[in-house]
Image (cartoon, rainbow, N blue to C red):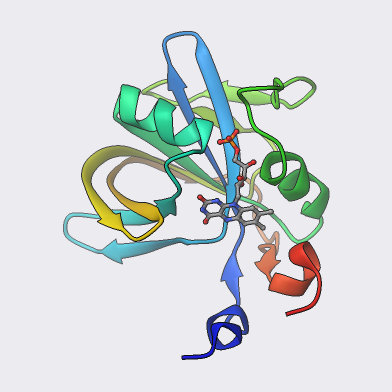
Length: 155
Ligand SMILES: Cc1cc2nc3c(=O)[nH]c(=O)nc-3n(C[C@H](O)[C@H](O)[C@H](O)COP(=O)(O)O)c2cc1C
């Protein structure tokens, strides 16, 4: 399959957040989706070098924060630098979820999850989480749609 085929399919844009002790971090992710009703499970594909990956592994929890169509700057903010080097939460409003994962106050909705399974999938690992808390924060907001060219230039 040509790589441009999957790039042509729109997905949502999320900020995946996690906490381990007093360390918090978040990163942008386009590869996230619900994968089961009963139990309610979501999956997100995260590359092992990401700082967020380490925090999820350490804590066993993560939160998916859905961005709205006017938040492309926030997606860039969380998606192009590592929390190992900078505090990406400086100036960003958040609250702690029931298990401590940061919830972005400006997100459309959030889904906090307990990590249930991790699958090695090529150069990313697939984290499957069971939903423990979720809410819509902005009624009527339209989600930010991931298009490859909006973030990474030409296909
Ligand atoms: C729009 C967009 C979508 C992204 N989707 C993913 C993804 O699904 N999985 C992933 O591992 N990285 C993804 N990234 C890259 C990470 O967000 C990026 O490497 C980030 O700097 C990692 O931060 P961290 O080291 O603080 O965790 C995406 C980046 C952008 C801009």
